[in-house]
Length: 346
Image (cartoon, rainbow, N blue to C red):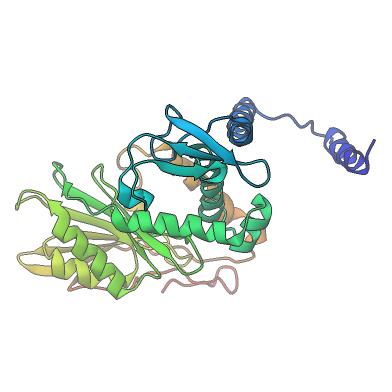
């Protein structure tokens, strides 16, 4: 038995000797099988790249009129597609297109797999360029290419007219907590079935203004249809929404530890702006919560009760307050409980 196999055997022994037996649940087993099938398909595409006799034209995606014109380096081949191609594309006075093993349709499918994998690791696992390149055994340049390709795509899409028949029109908007790179984030929103977004380096007054202005220009509704914005508690949203959608209702949800559970609603009454402050508990039982919402509530309760958190907080003020004007900052926040029983609420 090799050293590697011996090490794996010892690691498996640790699992099998657990007092509580280890056995993946049915859903986990199904997902493992799906992963197996996915990687089997990717390996098959890689095999096709070198085992195929006549590979496919990258423009037409088939090899109907592809002929082999010679051999290249490292067991690769050279091809020519005799179908029609724009001479501006070929760069020659001919409509035929020449390509090689590494520029074939099959090769691009392999590259696509790696680019998708790199982008997935970057966006869902917050991996670094260097770490992803090492993990996938590809160059750092290829990891950067996956990011730039996505940014190019995002820059050219998501700018269509937004037609919404709902009444009221509800706009959910938030700045992405998981950045897609070291210096790039996203404002994501949902308006009806539409998902407008904006790529930006950070969340501030200017990026919020540009995003809300873009919604104003693209949103098509009846003039008397009310608009409701649901955002986080950041102050960057206030001026853009008040200026560009003066009659909209703006609901702000605060998420930091000492303000979580506070809701501010900015609205107009008789042409004057007002702010209503109330705790989330006041509307928590309204409507039917989704399964994801229930799961997150249970998770938060466990986190708050965990002795490992090491911090105690006072209870959130349950006051309902109405101010005339726009209140920017949350009132009735929690404070750290310095000594049990002596904490106060701001």
